[in-house]
Length: 316
Ligand code: CP
Image (cartoon, rainbow, N blue to C red; front, top):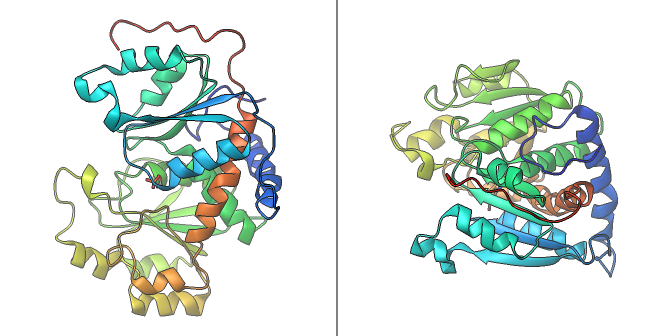
């Protein structure tokens, strides 16, 4: 049954995830046609509400919505009255008066997309909230993996790096486990929480993690902006211990492993330049697949029927 909102992966069951991944296939096939647009959301409006920077997610949602023939409005936070002290409540009220059908939100506060979803009949899609969730990134990761492993059951994905601050790690490991993939975490003890999701192997040593025989090495971006204390001695040290160096890339090539990364990449930290030309790097596939998966999500969600009445509590 379609949902009104997509706020996290935890609220999707395995059948819904597989449905969304299957629905992404025909949308991706559209990309090879001369006319890449379909009228599925003609007359619908999509509002992009990004309070944090984004390249991939923002442009991918915009392209996805336009390929479905929706009207897209970009809310430019830097140019908005938020910089003059307008609250989120006032902003939502103003924007809601525009009678939007879909709101795509990125915000540093975990849970804000959920709050907006409760206030509006528009469909709300979480495009990343704090360290909580990034569900469409997770779905595009699962789709990219399934292109290489149509039955991913029992395949192993090693997620490397800053798990603690990563909404991508949280959502992607959840979706992978739901489709039968085994997940491992590798990183400094300070960035790989010992408590948290069950059935995840945790490693602090690169060699031990490789001995687990992963099929995919999934590198996370080191998020300096979310680290209020220093979690490792230096970026150089991090690269030496956990980054894909030229030498490690050779081992990865010999083993035939795939490499993934959600972007944006810190070259020389998570990976060396040569990874970008590695024949089994799926980083560009992830970007391309993001459009198809987001088209499937927009097409699947059902905004609440009737008006777009708001019931905003005074506290917001
Ligand atoms: N993967 C991801 O969320 O990238 P952006 O921050 O560029 O959107």
